[in-house]
Each structure stands twice: as C-alpha cells, then as structure tokens.
Length: 298
Image 1 (cartoon, rainbow, N blue to C red):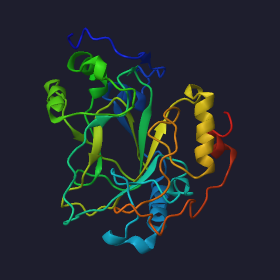
Image 2 (image 1 turned 90 degrees about the horizontal axis):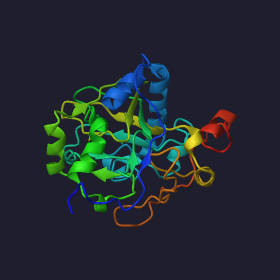
Image 3 (image 1 turned 30 degrees about the vertical axis):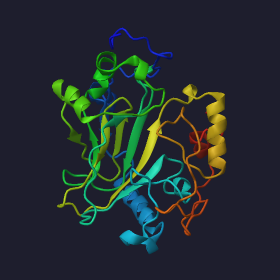
C-alpha cells in the first residue's frame, strides 16, 4: 500500500480558526508565513519589570550548579512558577543563560505541535518576550510558510498508518530536506522586551540557541491562544483542577489539558529539596484572570 493509498486510523478534523488574510494587521502575516511578531504588546517597562521578577524568583540559584530543575526543553514548570504573579498560568517560564562554555549548544529539534489528524489552524502558540532577542541571542527558530505545506507533507511523505493523535511531531534530518526542497529556510525571530511572538502550531519550529557573542539572559513566557468556545466541558473541568493545585498544562489552551508532573526531581531521581507546590507570590484572583484560566465563563 502506498503512502497516498493508506487509510488513516482515526478521524481527520478540520480547524475552526479562520485566519485567511485581508485584515491589515498581524493576522495577515500569521496566515501567510505561519508566524507574526506583535510589537509592543505590553509596555517595554512592564516587560523589563516582569523579567526582574523572574530573576528575583530564586536569586540563591544564580550559579549553574544551583539552578532549579528544568525540563528537557530548558523550561521551568515546577515549583509553582506557572502561577507566579508575573506569569499567571502560562505554559512555562523559559530562561536561557549565555555563553555556557561547559554546555555545548543543543542540536535543533524541528517539530510541530499538531497531529496530522487535525487539519487547518487549531491553535496559536505564543512567546511573551521579556528580553532582547537579536541575531546572536536565543530565540524562536521557525520555517516561515511551513504551515501552508503541512497537509502536503503528511499526505505525500508519510504513511497515514503511522500517524499519531498526539499533538507533537518531530522531523528527521532527511524530512527536513523535503521542507528545504520547497524553498523554506530557517529564520531566527528577532524581538524586543514587550513584543509578542505568535505562530501556528503547524509551523515547523524549535528553540534557537545563543551564539558565543551573546550576553543576553533570554527570559520569555510561553503562552497559547484559541477561542474559549472550542474548549469542551471536560477540558474546562480539567483546567480548573490543574489551576487549583498550581499546576502546569501543555502547549494548548483548549485541548490536551492535563496536569504536568509537579514534583521537581534532580538528575538522580531524588526530589529537589527546594521543591514547592505553590508560587512565592500569588496573582490577584480577579474575574478576568479567572476567565483566562477557564474557571468562569466569558
């Protein structure tokens, strides 16, 4: 059976987000290129204040050997940090330190965050930039326009019988050659404190490492966006449960909601003695915050 003849084991769903261009704002770029930068989404001064709050989160750890436990993607998502007042219930806090001579840059891990069973635009991911991101600094890497080739890749380069419903798919070096054959080239997205980077979950992307010339401590907050109407009753109930225990979820705002591991563990598997299960500075529980968390309806 050829790749084009195989029948998917599952149901293909089509996106309900309609971003088709012609708006005269960032949505046109998001539709055409699969990513966009909204300049000054929050005032620069406030962004710098938020970054300082992140630095103050645990100042005793400002040595490599004392850093809090990070995930494999260099994000902080334990210690209740997701619910700190300067973040509030985003996906993760991400800090990258410059010039780690003892830690070579990570190889790219190009991927998308949407299953091939989902077609069209389902979710918009975001980075709230709290630091400068220039050509030498760490930032989002992406393949502009790759979202427009997403269906073609899966329909012609893969066997549908191998598709997974998991909303994450990494691409091999050989597969990346296919994207290059379409004329797509990696781009490091540049941004300033207060800028909001958005991208379609179908856009091929990964975290870009800083060069040896960078002295910027990259500080960003990951977020995701989708209409509240797409969330099921079960998803909202799970969001509320996660919220109540100061937990973190996933890249998606309305789907794939589950509680990420809350206990920070050291490389040897032991619980980090600094582990805590609530934020240092809790956010003010206003109605707008509760709506964003899915606790009360819009």
